[in-house]
Structure formats: C-alpha cells, structure tokens
View 1 (tube, rainbow, N blue to C red):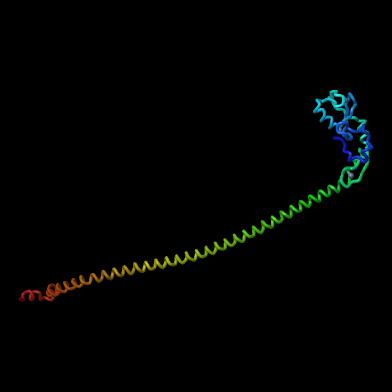
View 2 (tube, rainbow, N blue to C red):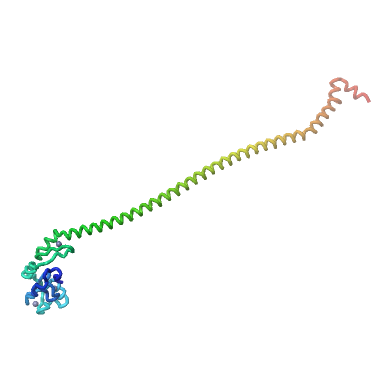
Length: 232
Ligand SMILES: [Zn+2]
Ligand SMILES: [Zn+2]
Ligand SMILES: [Zn+2]
C-alpha cells in the first residue's frame, strides 16, 4: 500500500510517475526493478513477488534483491502533505512532517484527551470499588453485630448454666444432708428397736436374779438358808 491521497494537499497535481503501478497510490518506500527500472512500493512488490515467483510484474525478469529508489524517494520528500492528526491543520513538506509530529499540539491534545478519558475510567472504577468497599464494610458491621449478639447470648446462657449448676450443687448438698439425717434416724430407730427387743430379756434376767437372790444367795448371806430348806 502506498501513500493515501488524503494525506496529500493536492493529490491531483502529483505526477503519475510517482504512483505505484500495482496499488496506483503515491509510492511508500519506493524500490525499483534493476532490469526495467520500474518503481514499486516495497510492500506491494513483495506481495506481488510472493504470488509471481519473485519475478518483476512489468518485465517478468527475476527480482532477487530489491533496491531502494533514492531519486523517487527524494521527490516524495518534497510532496505537500497534511498532518493526519484530527484537529491539526498543519501542512508542509513530507520530510518535515516527522519533526512536526514531535510537537503537534493536536496530537498532544489527543493524548491529553486520552489521559482524561483514562482518568475518568479510573475514577469510575474507583467509585465502583468505593461502593464495593462501603458495602463490604456494612456487611462486616452487620456480621460483627450478629457475632456480638451471639456472644452476649452465649454469656447469658453461661450465667444461666452456672446458676443452675449452683442450684444443683445446693440441692445435692440438701439431699446429702437428708441422707445423713435419714441414716441417723434409721440408726436411732434400730437402736430403739433393739432396746425394745431387749426389755423382756432384761425383765426375765431381773426376775431370775431376783429369784436367785431371794431363794438362794440372799438367805445364805443372811444365814437363814438352812431354816428355809428345813422348813417343810
Ligand atoms: Zn504500491
Ligand atoms: Zn522489471
Ligand atoms: Zn499536527
């Protein structure tokens, strides 16, 4: 592809000798056939050679090495061209355009606009991230409140459990006391029962002792035993 006519200030005034026979545009990077001296765009002839087995499209001679056309190149440098940056109205020699491009205000303005657009996109992304962060903070606060409520519930349950445990221990002590009292009562009851069961035996023993004393020992002691035995 050659130089677009839109880049030229007056494309109609350009000589046909400066136009490529393949693309019909003004040469870009002109090279020539060493046999027929025909000039082509380098890009155009390379594509043509790829299809025509490295032969010149004009004279069919083999083209092994492409040589730049310095004469045509210098003529192209003198062409009156435009700056292709939108909003720039600079025109001048083609070989001066690269220098203009280094300080083209419209190009700088385009860069500034691109940066501004990028900045706006970054601001929008930042705002979106801030919204996300706010949402996450709200969610975190909600979870924290929920966690605190659960912790308070757990503390209350623990207090209730401790109170119940204390009551249970108190009740256990009461039960133990009652058990002791019951055991003591049972022991006392047994002792009393045992005492009651011994009474008749004690009574009999006392009776026998009384008989023994009265009929045997006591008279002997008093010396009246024989009298009692002798008496019918
Ligand atoms: Zn061409
Ligand atoms: Zn040729
Ligand atoms: Zn410009």
